[in-house]
Length: 105
Image (cartoon, rainbow, N blue to C red; front, side):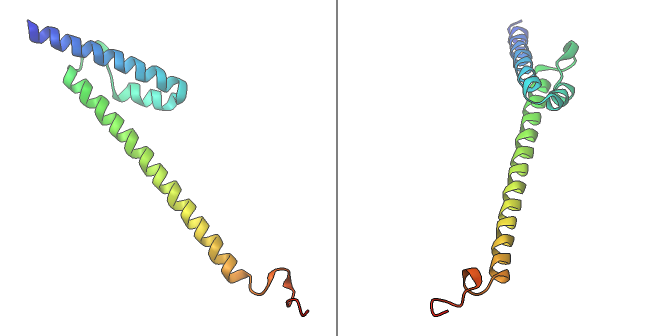
């Protein structure tokens, strides 16, 4: 009987966590909220507490991995663009600024 009560308590906590995450996502990113609701389900006791926890953790790991990948790609694109600008400036401009020959003129 104790194990069932513990499982029910864990399931209740997971349901509350699910509701809190879903509410936060609905405010921040409705499409992400829809994905979360579809993948990490709590409906009708279909999932055990262990399966629900695994789905929640798996989804979160996927979101973190996607965010890290996106940040890495953005940083690499910015670094590439900066390098291209430096290279074009180096190649495209020679001589003194303003095209003057110098103080002797």
